[in-house]
Length: 231
Ligand SMILES: Cc1ncc(C[n+]2csc(CCOP(=O)(O)OP(=O)(O)O)c2C)c(N)n1
Ligand SMILES: [Mg+2]
Image (tube, rainbow, N blue to C red; front, top):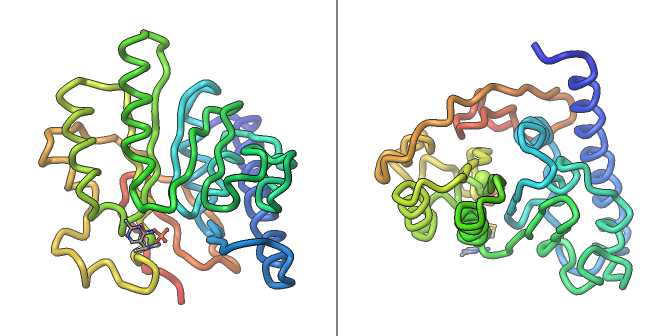
């Protein structure tokens, strides 16, 4: 069991993600945000659990649903919200918006609207870490839908063969948009896919979150869902 200070900080970051996302949802409903948004409500625990296992300087990449990831790394909210609003004071000067958030100040190298598109970016960061010896780690978040992208396996192979300081984290919410995972793959245990490259298991810890008013069930860091997705 982590000490009380760590648990309190985890809760604080989960709550910040939830409140940020609820605010974004309300603003989008009022037509106050340009473009489309994808929320990570219900996925706060795995975001915070994994981000707090990293050091401040470690790198992360996300996907189309990654407002929460920089917050998990303790990014200030103001620059993120300004970015969603397309303002010059945003973390990407308003050019990125909801699906291309990046906040280098906390090691967030960026989201990508191309699913699994952040994985090769993280792999490159891990290669940089290895070559320069900067002792950083790169963590790529991707979804169960993204797990069927070919680039993931190229990156797994490179990370394994070059022994890169890299973590692949599948946020398995059981659906790729509206398509159930079992309809598009015979191997629904995403963590098993690492075997094709000989990539080692994560020895993941389970992090739990409240299911109240969430869209999705809690998940394990290794990609195995603990329960069915709530409807
Ligand atoms: C390469 C590519 N193909 C298709 C899409 C369209 N698309 C957007 S979100 C999505 C589903 C992603 O599912 P998953 O990776 O499980 O992430 P989740 O939305 O569940 O968090 C798809 C197919 C895309 N953005 N990029
Ligand atoms: Mg999914």
